[in-house]
Length: 79
Image 1 (cartoon, rainbow, N blue to C red):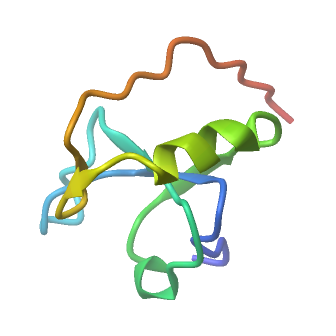
Image 2 (tube, helix red, strand yellow; image 1 turned 180 degrees about the horizontal axis):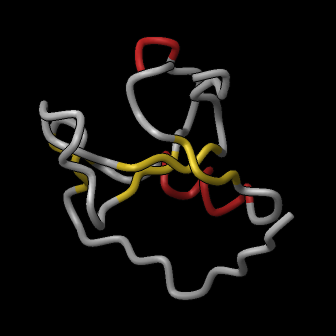
C-alpha cells in the first residue's frame, strides 16, 4: 500500500475483482494517485525511460494502445 503509482512503476493489471490479477501488467506513465493502494506494484523501470516516452506517443482507444506493443527484453534484479 505504501508504493505510489508514479512514472516507471510496474503493477499487476486486473478486472474489477481485486483477486483477478494473473498474468497482465501495466507500466505507469505518470502520477496516478487514483490507483494507489488498489493495484499491486511489483517493480519499477530503472533504465530505459526513453521506452516509456515512446509508449506515451502511441495512439490509444481508451487505455488500450491501437497497435500491439511488446516488451522484447527485460532484466530483473532482485534485491
